[in-house]
Image (cartoon, rainbow, N blue to C red; front, side, top):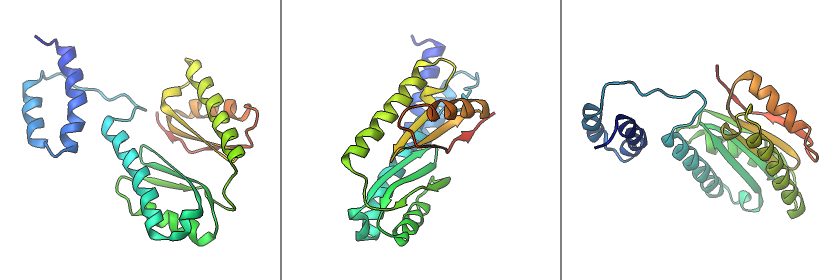
Length: 198
């Protein structure tokens, strides 16, 4: 027989899946069968459904941009979504493509905010991208290794030496993370794109 804790954990895992596949009627039966204690959400944590939605935004954004204009075929595009906050980074050849990228992403469901950080420039080199990956690794390693920082609630993206920080954090956490990232060697600039929570 399942314990209450096991039942609650199972329920928390199944609900997003049932809603995602249109099984709302089945959810009612599960809810009635479960005990009446509340299920609390933890501030700053994305639900399973939200993570799936973020992945969907990223894929659709890239596919739709390429479908909207052939100019994106020669661009270097980085699209990251965290809780509906979307970062567009990389390089495109014209201001028109930069504007079009925002238009394409704005049409996607679940998008709450768009940060268009695309540069009008030639695509970055392989060496630059390798350096960016190394910077991201150093920042993430520091975050995960410090218990006082929300490493698992922070998304780090580095593009051309610029570190973009995303996630759901408090104002104090945001200040601490940004200050730390700015001290990493190779970082040119830190851009805070956090969603602030209480």
